[in-house]
Image (cartoon, rainbow, N blue to C red; front, side, top):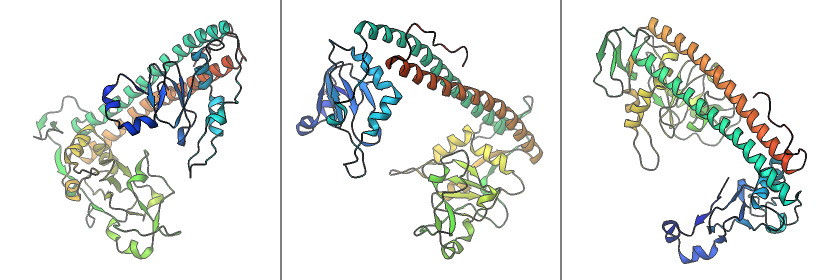
Length: 392
């Protein structure tokens, strides 16, 4: 984590924005100094400054005695996960709820220090081997990002063009949809809901949490790929009865109309009968559309663009219920919806299998990287040993 919080002297723009009083509170850093965060939730995060500059007083500045140690070797010691964990454990919590460390806490820490010649050899070895690991890690992350793009393209193609590449097309006149098969319709969501329901948000003032009450879904509950099955705030039965229109049932779709606008998640059986807040809205699919296809359509690139064009706000972005009700999607016949979802599920499973393999490899690479640094800077392995795994 190089250059943690350091502003270079030559960066006139940043320093020029600081008042003289602010500069007197800063600490001065020289090129090659080590910088350690001493406060808050990132205690022990570290870096080495590549230039002369200034940083916040919450950082501890260390100048390595170069007659006995190479600064980059000490930096590798700091990179040792066991060392980081130990430094973080020194936090004394004297600043209200926040932990903190000081120079007095860390000045007595002992580290193993080989001769400078061996330090240099260890650095050369780690630079070479860690470089290989980091390059492979970057490649896997890029491949995982590409898999995500492939999935998005797969969904976009399927829910706007269908599965037949030879199908006759028609222009919708909508920039986010473009052309769709001639036998498909362009429909607003309000025309696709179950009779007797409405697209609506939920409770305006839910009151304090009530144990044993009725759970309600907020935008903060929608951060994952699925709605969680527990951990919800609950309101009273009386308040819930006043918002019967926004109670959700299994198979409904909950859509965020604030914060992560447009994020759509299905309601599982465990949440049947739960309610909503103002930041979320429910859609109860009618007979012309399946829950699965509605979710796929709302997660498509076309939907993302449409939501982006509708979002308004200064303090936070949001869309109105009327905007959501008039939201348009391309609608194929039910039989074709089912075929499309079978195709998407099958192809998605293939991508998921590859993604899971890459995720396991990343975990192994991270574990191997940490072990390599730990064993080299603590003398448990010599740099001449064969430390490269046969396979990852």
